[in-house]
Length: 195
Image (cartoon, rainbow, N blue to C red):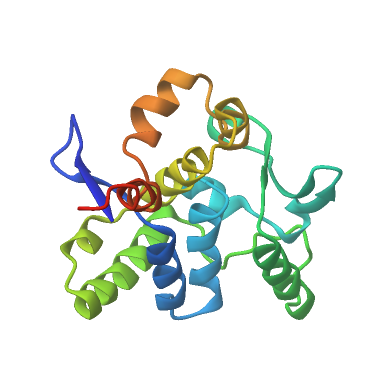
């Protein structure tokens, strides 16, 4: 886990490793919470965008399975890749529930509920691991983790901008990419015999 002090606030920015993302998803006590966390950490959705996801937003395209974000920040439309297992879970939830596919996936309607869910799961992980970094984790850190993971995997930065709905590279680099992912740092450290 990487932490960095916010420039204008008295808290920390957090970047999770992929192992920590898996820990978080496993710590979610139910499917609703696991879906919410995965939509942030695996699709890069902002908290208000997570609340708007419907099963019909998961579509197969020539570029692969994507999640259509119909009203992102500034009411902008975008499409972002969705992992196969997450798409399958969303479709399965849609199949077993009685609501139409155009109904929101989650049974909550406020970002405050998302924050409470994340704080509770991160608190449990803090208790399990003793890592104080979990106490700083906010929902937007899941988006930050997603973007940094893509950048560390050498995904074209302009495509990351498109998938994430950022207007310019400067905003992305300043606020989201921040530090190298823990996975990228570990990979680079392995190149140095004495580290």
